[in-house]
Image 1: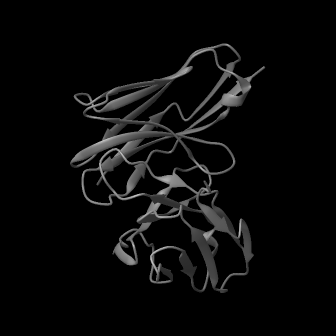
Image 2: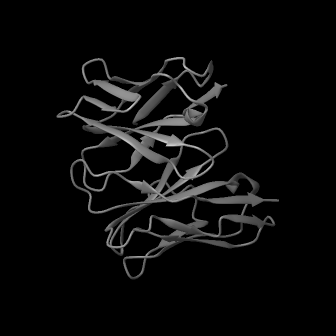
Length: 115
Length: 112
């Protein structure tokens, strides 16, 4: 079956522009996560959804970052007034439920470059 | 705050060598430790280690978890150039829908 997909794969934005990054999780997966991966670093947690409910957004670095999952499937991460420090790969992951011994499956990421 | 430290940060070996990658962690209410392989794309899942499964093996790759000393190792035997990648270690708390906390990763380069 299809894995996690993300679009666009690459995005170049001018500083101050708004961007929207899309994640299509594995069909039927209840849990969805967003991570930010800076160059040479491990992924860092941004936010978590269970169905359409955003249960944890403690990793969002500022109020310029906003995520939604209105129908409990596709999710969008929006970054307003982008800054150069927002340049990173944004990874989405999904998991079937959240139970013991379930793994998170990652998408290919969106590489964002802010000029 | 949860913390994961991986070592070495980079490693260069020749094909056929055996490598050991290290991961130490501090986490509140530990649930699991995971290893991922990341080439220039999505991290792909390798192993999950929990209290009920502290040793895993798949082909040339194996991993153990020491819950007392709070570390894990990933072993790769008879390395191949296709093993070149960043290997990420992550820990998960035992709370519902919990996030993963990752280490910086180990960049492994296998030369022919």
